[in-house]
Image 1 (spheres, rainbow, N blue to C red):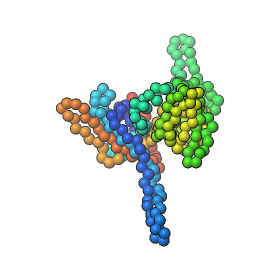
Image 2 (cartoon, helix red, strand yellow):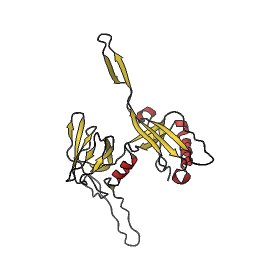
Image 3 (cartoon, rainbow, N blue to C red):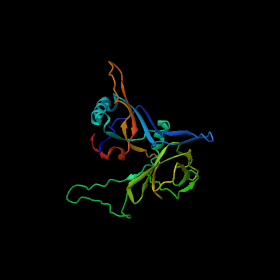
Image 4 (spheres, rainbow, N blue to C red):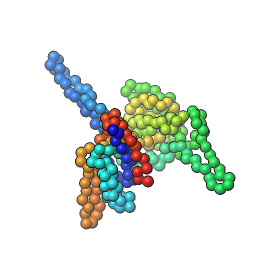
Length: 261
């Protein structure tokens, strides 16, 4: 039976961790005495979020308690996006560069002669984007990694640091995307070009790149649900610990968008 997957409530975090766990088994050969190590379980992402009870207009505690109720003791799950890997102020400055484009949401006007816009279907539909669109050049493999060239960026600017995530969108289908991770620091040249060293070769070629894209996954609470004691004065907080879960382990996911709207 599928489990419910709720969006994270509209509260930020005052502390966070986004990492992964890759369990291995260690074997020793009786013949040679050599050690051998191999993956013993699936690689999973681990997330920790510390939520202020006074966040979101002093409603952080209420959102946390409501999420606890919806998860029913940890049966159900929550969809999370990654928090900044490097210093959050550096990440904020990177986001302000404006290179996270997205499809423009056209809406019809009102009155007797509304100005209505519509995007077509198929691979060559009319697509308008907000923000500055960055399109990837030809990606080449380089040993364990991939090199992705980008152009049209601000000169002499650091646009990525080791561990940062990017999102790559299919130009023909904006709903199709994938995440890759930056291996080394990326600083543009005087002409605004740079080559990103990625942790793998993306399957989407020539896609639109969001330079501050986030990683994303579905998580169950790892351990008991958090509890927090309200103090007479000052703030208090909930510390949420999550571990990634996969659809084939639980009979599928039933997404519950709009829970908090």
